[in-house]
Length: 568
Ligand code: B12
Ligand code: SF4
Image 1 (cartoon, rainbow, N blue to C red):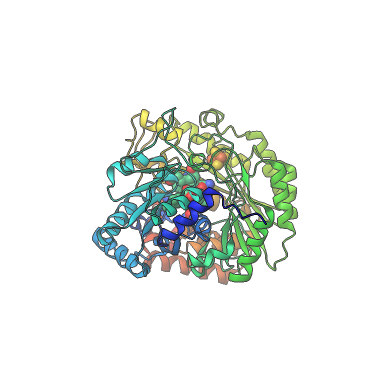
Image 2 (tube, helix red, strand yellow):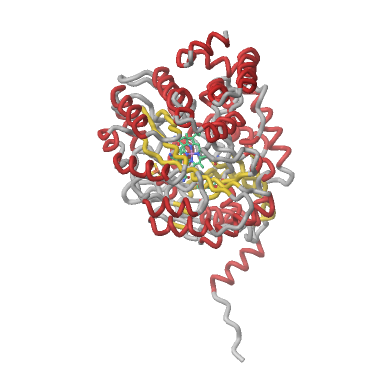
């Protein structure tokens, strides 16, 4: 019999494994914005809780690694910072939380820095880690980190390594490198003193992950799934209440479009890659069986090509779970057709969302979104005729956009007659064309001053066209005007749908005086005087006791004189 020949690579790996010390990894998840903003009384800065899928995928990629002893996660996104008004109080809580979770001595801290707006908090966390665990290695990744590698390494001596791009493959090799105490040149991993550029002078990035399937059984090892499945709640036009257990899922990565304000391609590229539909189905059944999840937020960037989209929704139509619900967070007009809408309807989905961003043809070209505005009319009408609630996302304040251009967007939104319109303010994100444009125009500096302080409806600079305060106010008023004052369901006497939407809304944002006022109008129009007067009492009580509710007073000119007189 022939002797078994062991290939060289396998022998080398086995030797490395023998010498290695399996290590403990501590993942760190950050809140989307600084705790000061998250706990502020400003109604416009409310944030939603959704699970950090990036960390789940990373944990999945190392689950079978012989170089890992344990992994855990310190999750600052679900940490309650109420009462921490000073920086040192936040720092103390950060350290306490780190120490509580780090039961093993972590060899690697793996920090996810996705949102630019989290940078201030990120710095504080890095400092606390290095104070306490001097010999530990800090590896950072995520969208913001991938686009600010040079700055982060130069200005934060606490950071040892940064992964630029998708992390699954690089992080695995990195763990092996640290565990075996060897040195390796890992594609897309940069370190202090070794920032790697390609021949075109761009930063080296990881290769795109090809296997997007996830071993969902590993979820409970990392996050507090009880909190996430109970708390995951993105506002939508879903017809079920927020008490239904929910979670986010993704079926694909990579969007082929070139919108100038978007950074997604800087990590996930422009070529759509899909998970196997069997794997997506397994994940859905597992989340349902393990945590009772019935509502699934689909958060893919896009659904391209349309054949795959139809296949996905057909697969979802076969899911046999009582009360099963899919909420589509975002779709592209240009990539959607009637066939996709039909498949969505067949899957029992009752609400969808499109990102149109602007009603101005000139702006559409400038931002390279190129939404076909007439097609949007057709798709919205078609979807509504099939019983779908349609939500639309708009952005105002792109570079060089005038107030007249913004007005075009408001007029377009009116003409479209969607069920909900969300107006945000354009916030420049490193790695995007829009960021470079705002830097070139002299409105922002390339650095932290333009990263932090940003929320979905606020940015940190004035332009010659409009001030920071004025654009925030304009966007917020547009939201109040189109969704509350001129709510299409109330206007069309579709009171049942309106009651569900606003009850859900209030479950998330109980301080929202305008949402209570919509319920009041629903009750008034349907002749339920008892509920109407109860709602007025609730509004009065909120205005007395809740600071955030009181912040709505500046928009009271939009309300009926009669109710304003009642509220005093
Ligand atoms: C879901 C989502 C949200 C959720 C929250 C997500 C969460 N808490 O995790 C909600 C809806 C709340 C949200 C809100 C906003 N979002 Co958002 N969102 C997304 C979205 C669509 C998916 C995120 C996701 O789960 N990705 C999937 C995972 C697998 O990818 P990943 O996180 O990038 O992780 C991979 C790598 O980055 C890397 N990696 C990540 N962490 C680490 C750590 C280590 C150690 C390593 C080695 C590697 C690594 O490896 C991972 C696996 O490959 C992304 C776009 C996208 N496709 O990523 C935008 C995105 C993150 N959002 C973005 C923005 C700007 C916003 C908003 C500000 C509004 C807006 N204008 O779009 C708001 C408000 C946030 C705020 N500041 O208040 C930007 C962020 C860019 C930036 N630098 O800030 C993105 C990239 C989209 C875009 N427009 O460019 N968002
Ligand atoms: S369609 Fe969406 S994900 Fe794709 S580039 Fe535009 S904004 Fe980004």
